[in-house]
Length: 132
Image 1 (spheres, one colour):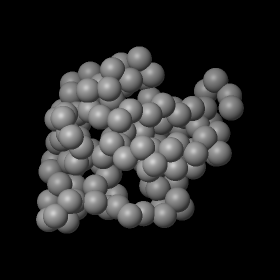
Image 2: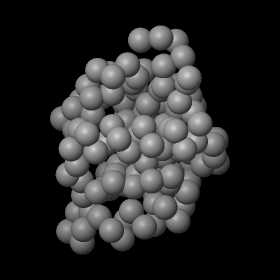
Image 3: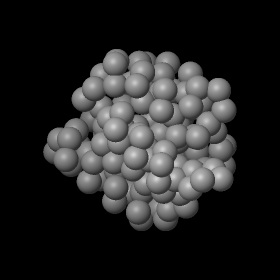
Image 4: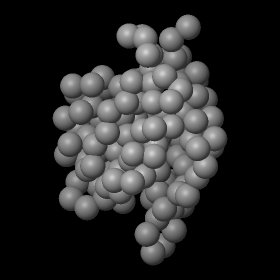
């Protein structure tokens, strides 16, 4: 991994999913930071200075919509990709709200490793935050 490798912050309350997504991006050379909830994510966002954020919307405590607002206030140039399985009502309502609050893209759970890699690559390319 090079010092100019893209930096991804992965925020999800599901520890297994966090580890799986972290491995996907670690394996392709990203610098990876993880957080289990919105409060930890905001601190990591300030400290880690990610190139992109993968943010779960439904989490206990400080949920993803609030966290999106906080991150947009700190640095609106960092693209956020909202993720949601939607709980009992499905993901569409939550993902639409995330986009309205400034998410660059959304993805419904479950997703494949290829889908999430492709989406992150597209968002980074669109935001010109990918080195090279």
